[in-house]
Length: 194
Image 1 (spheres, rainbow, N blue to C red):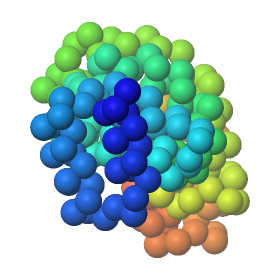
Image 2: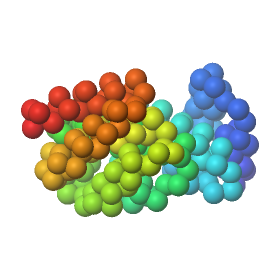
Image 3: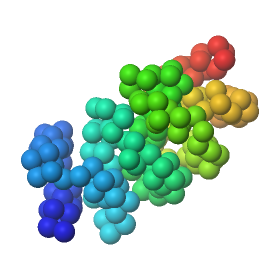
Image 4: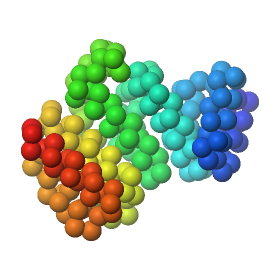
């Protein structure tokens, strides 16, 4: 319990890249489990703690995607219910990187058992959330770009997504930022080769 309270205290501070690295080093020294960090991504008592937990969780997972294996079902089940917009950015990036590795059958990044989960999991509620977040005018650009790319990777398995995705990204491109326009071009190009 002491470790959890200390981690919450550290996550509740303003942390930049240096602070993030310090917390990650402290977690390693104190043997803080990744499961505790993942649990704090849904910390309702303080959105800042949840945001910082998600940021660190993303950083650690992206170092080695296979580390998500113990959490994959919890992560996928929790994904559509994330209400904290700052957490969404980190979760949508993790999802995108997992789907990309799966689409490219990257067994060097993901063990076969994890690829199998991604091949067989029912992503319908996640697809719905991804589209909802793309059309939400209050959603952050960082979330939208990862959602667009995730939907592209999911369109390989669910071909109907392509028909819905193209008009959505075209609409976003009319008023979008440079990041939206860049990702829009990438996704449109990928959709043409499908």
